[in-house]
Image (cartoon, rainbow, N blue to C red; front, side, top):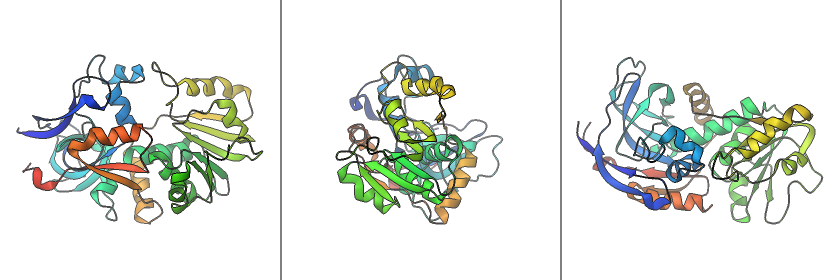
Length: 332
């Protein structure tokens, strides 16, 4: 079976719980493919999995320690082996998507969670698409029901999900306003936002303006403030719960569900594990040039703890990629 380099965590906590190690190479099960990882992506979920917060995430990952000690989710690489019952993929295919344990030289992925890598993208760019872009797509299209001509406000427009949300909303024909900090305003303009609100200088909810659709990404704004930014029959979509405490992490989502039947505005929540159908939609938008991943920084495999530390500190611009050099990988 052989061994491989990987970033592992033996418990929950700060980035110091992550360390490089040699571990057994995974074997693809039925419906899975083994990927030789060329690059991985850092998303907010990798921080939650590392920290074990909110505590509810441990119900799925492992109560005291992660059942799968290898960290990482976003992935891009080449198919090294194909498990039983898998059709449509062959050894050598370049693919991207999600694979639990992507901070490693090899990772096993469900065949319905990966797709052919867009030819327009390198591995580092492709590795930062799946989790964040699928979240943005499902938030705007499915939960938000975005339509051409609508005014859309993206709160958190400079981050991983936000940079995709701005581009997707434009691709769907909306007029887009992005909310971000001063240092990231030019980035948000460069990806197509019609207007940028610097939250350090202006409160988007205090100016008497309103939007048809507000997508709030991992923010801390209370529902009352977000609703003030909506038109009387506008839609609020909450994609994140960074402020909602250590236990459940979904306080605003629960509040939105409880309040929605009693107000004219739509208050929507959603959960968006990447699916092949979503990746196929994104492939078309990427190949046509309507969406381009924003890779703000690239780190090596051993630098994963620092990459996650910078993400948690709010220092990341767009998405962060982790590269795994082909020369270090040996043979499948």
